Length: 380
Image (cartoon, rainbow, N blue to C red; front, side, top):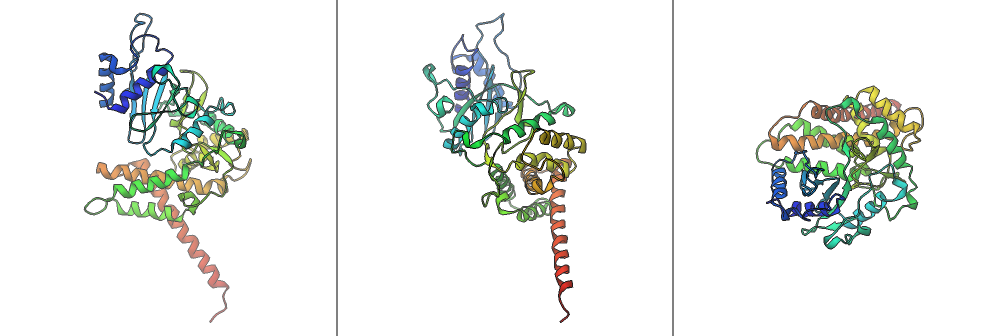
């Protein structure tokens, strides 16, 4: 049998799915659906999704497990994706984020949540019917299924569409949204990445790749306190996604609808430059081609995005967030490589090397500053 929270998610998704007009209302009511779910749980990357067809209209909706991690579980059932959020999730802030995502100002920018159908056909009790608690206390939400970016066709990645979506999101009048809108959680995620790296390295024996860890730690220490989630950001006037990457976009309706942003767990007020920081960091480390970066940045500026100046050098605004995302990516890479007993791969090494360059550049700048001061002093 699948884990209890997975069975509950399956029941939630099947009740919410508009296709659920026939058959039982929970996966436990139908052995075939339960077997499929159990198989998916053993293989989290399963993507096949049998649905009722005109030839078999009585067939129940069969849930497919998309992701099952300690912080997130995603399960698809027909046209609905049910999500169990992190156990330590702030439910009150998540409720606000859901109301914001459902607000008309975000229509056409963020995928809106679905009203969650509870037992007996009634709406879920939290966040205006958008949030339901599971038996283990984790909050659960439901969303329309959308087609994600294809990892097999990087040339077709929607860089310009992503930039335009961000520009629209950053231009939303935040004061008119349901609130109080919580802070954007980008710096908090960076700090969690460092904590995860440190926890992964607390094992007996000599630490793996010590020079890489030292470079990441030193690069982290060079960041200003706000980028390490130790102080308020200097700017917090824009609605931000907080964890922008190409995995956070889907086409809805499937398969050829417009691109929309998904995953609102980190949505909130902050510095909009943070949402541009990951592609900026990839460009700076050589992981994103210059023409793709130019297309992305140009589309953002053309759409009136407020994160950077409309022309000229964007790096005064992007430098700190891009460095923070580089350190975050490198820390997560080492956190994954250490338990697996492997060395970082090429892309992971590029991020670690970028951290090392940050440290060396900071040392050179300090040395130059000291030399200038000494040169201006009179001889003893």
